[in-house]
Length: 185
Image (cartoon, rainbow, N blue to C red; front, side):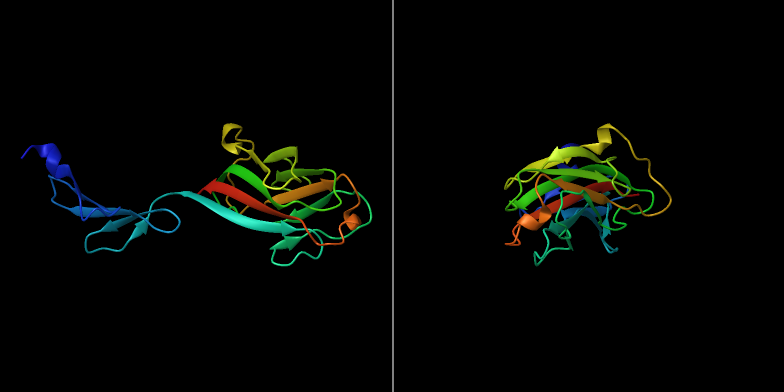
């Protein structure tokens, strides 16, 4: 049997692979868990080894149930900033921020969104419009490297400026999902 036939074997057509080192005769399994790639050494403890993570938070209009955060209900078009918390771990770098409009808000003619690591910041995403159902806006921060990793967890802030009074929405319809992708050491 040629050497390359013994390096990789598929067992029972599962997504787990057996990798055999000819030098040490050690078997390892590589599989996909719910969130990332996982290494299963024979007789050892499983270890996750993919360092790209994603955190999802939801934001709703005033009174919208089932959201992590809600905008308040002023009677003007003043920008509002929401602190999503310290979701980027220490020494991690943000790769991308993505916002998806899950429910188109009623009464609004525009919605300018920003994302950053400080209140009213735009380090991750400059002002972009996102108020129509299924609209996806994203900025690949990895190409810009605008924010360097720090030795403390970092916050993510979302800012929103409506084109009409927030109070025009009396139906509590309007929801956004915010995805933050980052690398972790």
